[in-house]
Image (cartoon, rainbow, N blue to C red; front, top):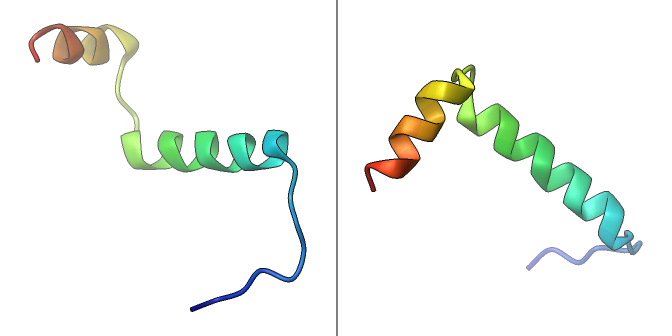
Length: 40
């Protein structure tokens, strides 16, 4: 188990996760993404 020696703020964590989500999503046009989400 990895221990984190320093704490991060919630804002920093949210920013990091948002960046990760953008990378994982890739270059998807907003219209295409909206269409994909409405079919679920």
